[in-house]
Length: 165
Image (cartoon, rainbow, N blue to C red):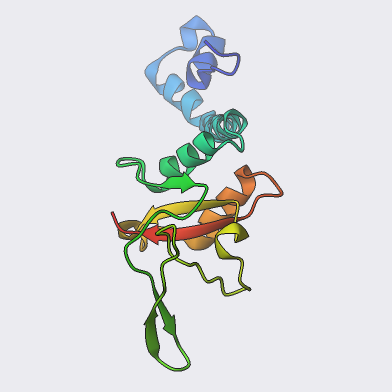
């Protein structure tokens, strides 16, 4: 039992004298404390959210857990890796020339990554968030970035990759 475990409607009935505890008066008292009950519910939800944030920190296992809890709670397919996962072919689409090119593989059999903000290669990011393509339509990218920025360490850089599978 928690310190915050309150039954406001029952408490309001217990404050009534015994001779007034009739169904009509009890219903009136319970409806009069309904606003307090709603505020109590909001407080308990806020408290649960704060406890959840305090239990999770910047470790990879916790960050992966938070992302899977929010975006893929059933199958839990979102992963976090230190480098890009091996993929068969990477294509690069140039919008101004409307051409598609196949990116060359390096000798490590990992694709060469080209970043729009400047070339960083594989070392441009500290970790990669790998999200299945099937979740592409359901995930808001701005919300995902905000959540990752909340839980990651301040000096770490990340990239979001959509993978098959």
